[in-house]
Length: 279
Image (cartoon, rainbow, N blue to C red; front, side):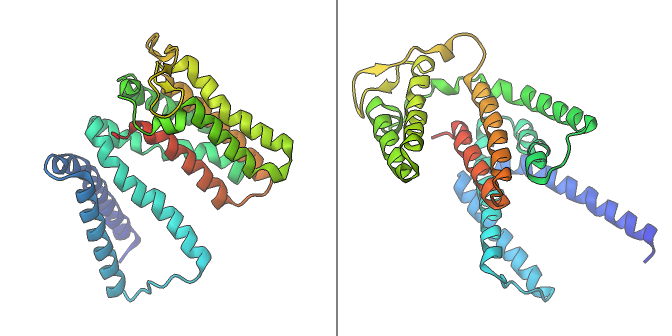
């Protein structure tokens, strides 16, 4: 087969791939009207496992994982890229328009550009910076309407008293400080202050939903986030991105492994994304 025929074949396959991938989003939205999200995803992942396993066996490929290191890398990649992605996207589609979700989901160029500098040492050229600015502007246009829907007006969850009440913040701060006591009192004190500052910073921002202790009838909060149209989620996201860039630079200079850095960043992003979950 000639090179021209190979190029045409590749373009046809690429077009079919884009068409099939694009059709999956409206098909998932239709399926969610009849099938619970977890049931749908379990069925889809099971079908995917059977299909890939069958194709690998037909091609004579080995499914053996050569080493524990490779298994750890595959597990981390699968957990975030396959499992978390598959579980969270149905809830996103149930909370927003499918077209908006499909675009917002694929923000990989933004994260790749931000992490390429501290991890890979790549320079942020003018063209890349311009493209990054366009990506962020586009994502802001799509995310801002969702962020202003009043996520903070959701009823207080039962676990908030055990994580955000004054008494429990003191308990968590003390426990975490004790974990770092071997590194010195200064480090332990810094950890305690950092954890307790969460309550102090939440106090002027939250409405009156910060309990004194679990199941307390007395709640504190000034409620600044309900003043004006600017949503607190955008502020938290910007602060998180700045702190992540700082962490990546420091971790890279201390020669921490890329796997450890990426796992930490993904964990922080996952915790931050919990605001979009319906529970």
